[in-house]
Length: 306
Length: 171
Image: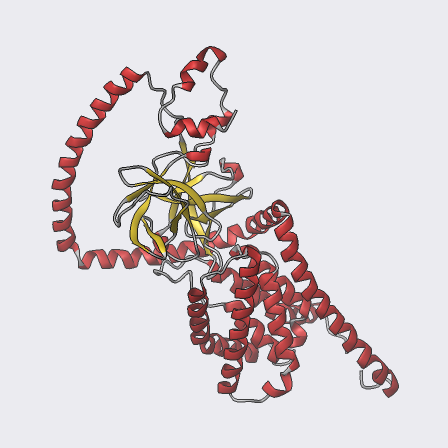
C-alpha cells in the first residue's frame, strides 16, 4: 500500500468513502424495503423465516438440551427442600380431587344419557404431535417459541399448541424440522374464547405483556375476576374447550387475563392435530341431516367450512 | 515471503471471527433459559457485539455483515424482518462516525457511549415495530430490556476484549 504513488491515494480515498457511504445508505434502504415487503407479502417472509429457522434448528436443539438438564437439576433440588410441605399439599389436593372425580363421573354418565337422547354427533378426534422447545424467541416485540418438530412430523400451520395446563398458542410457521409457535401473549394473537360459566363470547387478544386482554365482548355481558376462560372453537381454528386462563382483573383499562401456562416452564409442547378432521373424507350425503343437528359451538365452526 | 495455505486459512478464520461470534450470540440469545420473565427482557447480546466490533475492528465487520446479522436476528426472534437490520446498521453507522472519540478512552466512557446508543436503538426499534403493527407496543418491556442490556454490557465487553487480545492482536 505504502509504495503506491500518493495521488492515487488522494484520488481513491474520497471515492472509496463515497462508495462506502452509498453502500451504507443502500443497506439502510434495503432494511426499510424488507419491512415494507414483509407488510405486503407475509407468505414470502414466512417461508424465508421457516427456512432459516430450519437451518439453525439442530444447533438450537443441541444448545437447549444441557440447559434443560441444568434447569431440571435445579428443580429437583428445590423440590427436595420442600418435600414435606408438598406432600401435605398433595394429600389435601387428592382429597379434594377425589370429590371432583365422583362429581365428574356422575356428570359423565348423565352427559352420555343426554347425548344419546339428543342424537349428538361427537366432534372430531384429535391426535398429538409432541415437540421440544428449542428456542424462546421474542424479547420485547414478539412472543414466540421454536419447536424441534416440523412438517415431516405432521405439523401444520394453525395447529393449537398446548401443555397439560392449557393453551399456549398456535403454530404460525412450519419448516421441515422446526415449527414456530405464536404465543397467546403475542401482539398478533387473537383467539375466540368463552368466559365463565355463562360462556360469554369474547376474543382473547395478546398485547406483548404477560397478561393478554379480552376484547370484542358483547355489550351488557359481565365477567368477574377469577372466571375461567376456554377456547370456543369459533372459526374452526382451535378445538373448543381448551383451558386458556382466568380473568385476573376487570377495570376501566380492560379485562386482563392470567394464562394458565407459565412461559418460562415450557419444555415440551403438544400440538393438537385438529385439522385432521378437515382432511379426512367428509360424511356421505346421507348423513347430512345429522351434521345439521350438531350442538353448541361446533356448529359455528363447521358452518363456515363448506 | 508469501504465507502458506495454513497461514492464509488461519488468517481468514481470524478475520471471520467477529461475524461468527456475533451470529453465535444471536443464537444464544434465543436459547430457552427457563428463568421466569427473562425471555421477554433478555439482553440484546448482538447489539453489544456490533457496538464493540464497530469500535475496535470495523474492518472485520463491514456494513453488509451488520445487515446480515440484523436480518438473522429478525428472522430468529420473530420481529418484523428488517427492523433489527435497520437498528443495527444505525448503531454501526453512529459508532463509526464517532470512532475517533471512542479510541483509547476508558472503559467507563465506552459504557456511557453504549448507554446512549443502546437507548437510541431501543427507541428506534420501538418506533419501527409500533409503526409496523400500527399500534403502540408495550414500552415498559423495552425499557427493562434496555436496562438489562446495559447491566450485562461490562461482562460481554470484557469477554470481547479478552478474545480480541488472544486472537485478533495482529489482525
